[in-house]
Image (cartoon, rainbow, N blue to C red; front, side, top):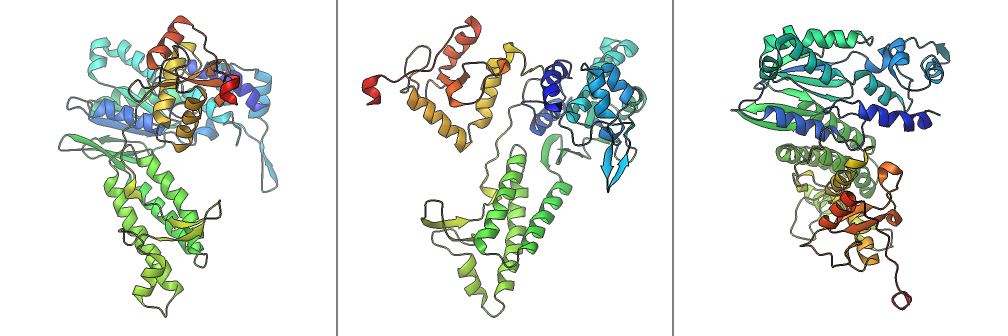
Amino acid sequence: MQALYLLALEPVAESTSDPNSYGFRRNRSTSDAMAQIFATMSQGASAAWVLEADIKGCFDNIDHDWLLTNVLIDRGVLRKWLKAGIVFHGQFQATNAGTPQGGIISPTLANVALNGLERQLTSQLASELGIGKAKKLKVNVVRYADDFIITCVSDAALETHVKPKVVTFLAQRGLELSAEKTRITHIANGFDFLGWNFRKYSGKMLIKPGRKNVQAFYRKLKETISKHKTVPQEELIRLLNPMLRGWAEYHRPVVAKQAFSRMDYLLFKALWRWSVRRHPAKSAEWVRKKYFPSPDNRNWVFRTMAVNSEGVREWKELHTLASNPIKRHVKIAGEFNPFDPQWEKRGEEVRQERMLASMRHRTSWSALYKSQRGLCGLCQCKITKETGWHDHHIQYRVHGGSDALSNRILLHPDCHTQVHNLGLAVVKPTLSVERAL
């Protein structure tokens, strides 16, 4: 039921969202929030002071009356969800505030409640100080779910002009700032946000994995190793690799090479202790040859021989973080709306840019290329590396089109522009009888 109502509510919420809100929205991520902070604070003349804000128990304290008045869905249904209560340890507990516990519609309801913070703050400052003075304050809001930061040229302006308006905005929705986690910081001292540390070193802004995030991940790795002291080496590698790849992918857009190398070293030490413990009577050289063999020119790689899905024996090795190249993130436009047909073409381009490094998507593009015999779906001319290509959805995604290969076709970039600007129709190519035989 919630999923059905979410289908109707999400486009409305998207249309009323602030440009720099990035949590629980399609095609937006923590990397977009990070890129926006870099864009607003990296220059020499950028705002240097930051209000690090955290809402106290956001999902648990949103005022029900505010939601019932402002959320554009059936009030009777919404009231039942909000007042349904929860059962905890066999005891029923009434819910007098907050969004449905564990409900898939809860993040969108929270976004609806917080939408308008950026726009309202900007307009109130302009009314109070005048448009010119308000712009000179360089106030920028970047929000991800219930965590957000606000930039300004001075700490005094944040304390006197900005923070009171934020407090009033939240109070209308039954919310308040967390006194423990909310503070005003200078960019030279740095601040943590979404697992990254943002700081200027001699005027140059660097974004690195946050210390708390690094420490938490290392504890997670050590806990996994500690819990699996007796498993085969192949099994331990299978457990660790997804964790390593996921952490590396998250920090890939920032200055993370040093953190990657350091984590590889710490993990090596933990794995060496794991290996030695299993064979207390063996020499260090014997342990090295067994768990860190060198069949090629690379030494000290944690690996072993294993049988793959095709029954062939091959080397299975631990993923090294330092092998991940740093790749800057292409930020989504603040005005981008995935439910607006005019943004359909840009949405396809962003999706292609972000999925270019994925082997799964390269495989699907290869299948499309072969099915089209290497020809553009519109002009029927050759698609080459020089011409480039765009992955076009025949039935637009905003109209319910799927990501299945049957609904996608490769076009030249210029042809893709023509299809969207002129409303041209393209169809999947069909192989001739002779070609099929």
